[in-house]
Length: 353
Image (tube, rainbow, N blue to C red):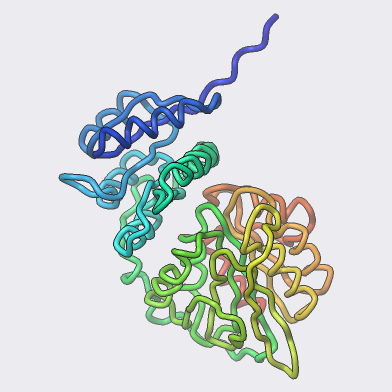
């Protein structure tokens, strides 16, 4: 008996430009695993087609008439959670709106090509198809009936204090869905927490703005890392896009080294690179945290951290957008326990106390 053909991932394209809708449709339909089931020029038409066509994934333009993509997401996700991949521009406003969209429930984003349109378009379509496939596996059910608040409204006014020695360090790795998860953890830690190093898979055009937004809603200071930055209590350093970040411990001081390099585990910056350096340089003085993300980046390095005496935690499946990196870290023995995202900061505080 012949095997049943594999079901294609159903995609809805939302963009105000008919040319862009045509280009995206043609590009997505060339992938044998994907099928464009509909297009929409603006959010109101999109809403009707979501209900009628029941797509698996939606691609969404940032700038549209009547209602921009972010406002559409804020209204849509609590009522009808659906995995969304944003298609954004690299203008300053485009970058801001993209990060707003991730706050509002988008799973991921791709950037429209800048100068070399033909070559850039091919690369964008390859990336978009890959991210649609990842998004189709994403868990967005936690957005159901969720009340949206702006990140600046989420700062915890009284999140306690810690007496931390300066040789403690916290290493956090995240990918798909990680912008929200990183924010939840960092904004729940006190200003006196040990120094933190974070690798969030993100292009170089976005990491500085991501750090600046976190700095607004966290008691700790948050900034994009630069080579030579000291990792100190009350400071979280975000790895710059397209640069690996490692730490070095000399004379009782941690400093970061940031430099370009080949992709490791498919990424630069790589959690694997960062956590391996933490295992070597910090050993039992470290805490490792693995958050939502596709793939296995950092799984073996977290095991190295644990073997060196570090305490290690990972986000559980129910609260993860994509339970890839946390699952791999746990199954390979790197993560001691799986915890809901809302419990991770509290457990860090317990471990430090």
